[in-house]
Image 1: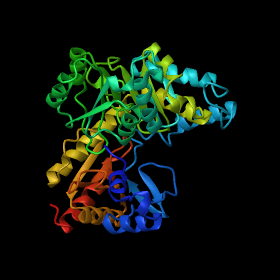
Image 2: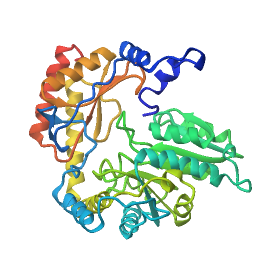
Image 3: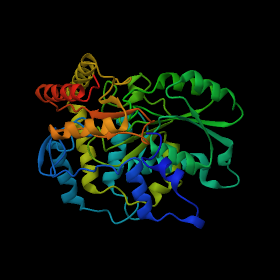
Length: 416
């Protein structure tokens, strides 16, 4: 999403130091204006069936798209690495936390995504918020080009971590309309003499649509811009081999800065950037979230290795996922719901009104369907939706059960 969940709200209502608003009063205001988020607690591992506060539920909100977070083979590899290398690493990568398993994993990630090298960071959010300023500032030395000589062109629906990374970069930031290539070109044409970086999500997390990355790459070549894609929701999913958005458009290895996460399709946690050798070598001494964060724990590294191995040896898992989300999406539309322009495993069901969106969520929960509610300020006002996430391991029986309940709730609330 384009902003942190409460970012705009806090900025609008947080008073100056002369009239400081106490935290308790601010929380009361949040509760009154938009309602504090209803945070549920899982009592089990994530999968298609979960226990939520003791209640058995069908999970339709997890990022565990390929079902690998609780996969036996993946867990065995994580256990193997944990047993041999321990729980923690005892340091950051530049000091004492660099293990042979990190380097081998990063080589696997680079090969998987079509690049020479890669770098791993503790979280996907930390990857974007660290890499973007590093690229923009080029170490901050006077003999290098300053950040203000760079213009970043960012899709208006880009994730909050990209937004924060752009802010930290101190570069000039220009927002182009969502997936609007003509508007992007208009913006690019105004800054011909500047260094330029185009940043986009691969799959957009709120709408489930795919960036027009092929067109973006072509424009970048024409206007001398670098490209960066956030493939958090694409790695393991899109492309012939699951390499992500670039492979989906037959542009494997053509994005300059290919960012992704291990927490979604891969089913583990952490983030990465893949690129050429010089870029990765540079980031190791310029990206603060890499330099000053502990290296990934051996269990996480083992999980990533196990997941990549499983994805490589089981191409049918992506086909299962594609069949599932195409069926779910098309059936929702037949019933009469809008799912925006989703063509992926993220299927947003449009409700609109915030109160009605919350009512929809609660009704689904009561029927045993766990799918998160998304409303303002995470998305524009009057575009509240239930965001369904489809998994490769969902059965047709589970999907049909969910569809029947969704239709019943939609009619009850007079949405369809």
